[in-house]
Amino acid sequence: MEFIAQNMAPIMFASLIIFLLIGYPVAFSLAANGLLFFFIGVLVSPYSGGSINLAWPLLHALPDNFYGTRVMSNDTLLAIPFFTFMGIVLERSGMAEDLLDTIGQLFGPIRGGLAYAVIFVGALLAATTGVVAASVIAMGLISLPIMLRYGYDRRLASGVIAASGTLAQIIPPSLVLIVLADQLGRSVGDMYAGALIPGLVLTGIYMLYILIMSIVRPNSMPALPLEARTLGHGVLSLIVALLIAGAISYGAYRYLAPTQGDNADILGFAVGVIVIYVAAIVDQRLRLKLMSKLAQQVVIVLIPPLALIFLVLGTIFLGIATPTEGGAMGSVGALIMAAAKGRLSLDVVKQALASTTRLSSFVLFILIGARVFSLTFYGVNGHIWVEHLLTSLPGGETGFLIGVNILVFLLAFFLDFFELAFIIVPLLAPAADKLGIDLIWFGVLLGVNMQTSFMHPPFGFALFYLRSVAARVPYLDRITGKQIAPVTTGQIYWGAVPFVCIQVIMIGLTIAFPQMVMRYKGDTVDPGTIDYQVPQAPGLSPLGTPPANNGAAPAKGGVPAAPGTPDLSQPPNFGGAPAEPAAPAPDLSQPPKFN
Image (tube, rainbow, N blue to C red; front, side):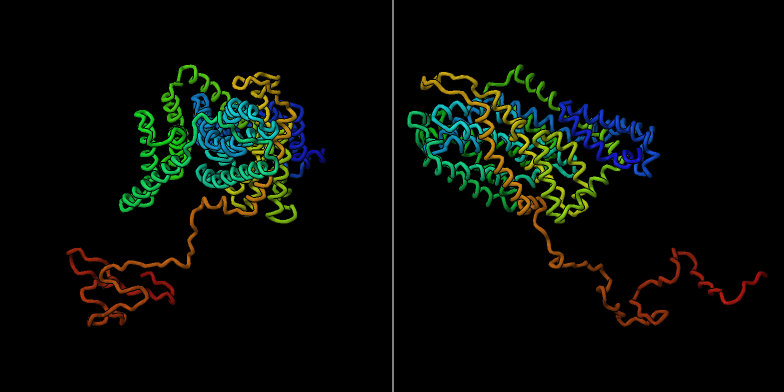
């Protein structure tokens, strides 16, 4: 009994892992494990030597935990249903299809062009939807048949689609960043600002990998044939249009700078984008042929999602809206985009609401189970056990970061990012904070690491999403009429391995170059360069100098007094009789006399 009482925390944690590995639902495993060990902890607490602080009245704290600011009244988590709804509506609106078709033709003449297009569109969808399932399924349905049609390697095509879809986990407005910010007790806006550069760097590394593979194995990713480029040529026209838009943006910036200050650059960029977008629509409708067909299509297809990104992220970064308000505006923007394309219907709204309700309920139940588990785990001093275990790792801060990332990487084989965020992160955060690690940096680092949970064989959800839409049996291609071989599960798994390695490299880069994340703090100010100037009130001498007497007679005590200066040693006189002189101070060296 004494052994169980004094080692309750590790036994409780190990039993939770066993429950999860057996296959019980995560939310119920957390809650049942917490209640079971609460009962055991109350019974064995007399044998614990004071290390267990559990009693039956403590269960009364559970309703407060459920309805308090951590669960039901948590405004931060309200952003999750908003961004989920926005992503699903955008996926139904056909935005991904238009983007993939247009960007694919833009990059089509070069080797690996379709792969570049998938990565580029994956980053755009990540910045608009924030939902991995929507991105992977959309690109799997649209891009995978085209890549197979033109001879792409099946492993490469599968891996690039799955990896590009997981960019929604690290590029704002990511759902996992919202959850991490909540669990770490930090601002979602700061988490978004810190994750932006690492997300873009990871996108660049994906493209670098495609470039290397196109040189090493050129036959694995051929260029699009000429007959497939239905939009024709016109890259030069697009470059000219972008240069004109840039010139207009710069002119608007110079015009607005005197009145708008720091916001002039963003407003000037918005003016340039609006002008080129209107020009492309007018050119297309009136058939003026000022721009090539390719340039028209690229501008018309790219501008709406970019505008939606600005509506959501731009307002958050400028401090105009909170993440929850940004998600609400993004949902309205997604509905407007779907209506503009003629694809908004009652059925689409019902599907989006149903999917949003399922995901939000899933998150809520896991969070409630996590509160039950943490009540007991903290009652047996489990947080102290975890903190001592992690802070005693060799290597200090670096050793802690390496050890934690290895732990999260291994757990990601069996748990998804919500489970990791609600179970593991609350245990890791106190130890990181005690070591002086910036929690925004730590959260972004964990976000990059948790991204691998979608790519891990055999339980990676991105791989499951792609498997659900990839061909399982041979089929006839509707364009070429050729029979296309199916994509096997093994090819999907092996295709994910290089991108999992790239994500591990990104974890190392985030540790080695923390300024990628720490830029969220803005420019640092050296206190030694600050010039302090205290304004002087009229009639007072500067600080550190004796008061001027201006020829006045010395006041009582020998201190010169300025003319007209009141005698502050006396009480004020408001027009009545002259104040009486102060009574002499008593002689405290003698005993008091009572006459």
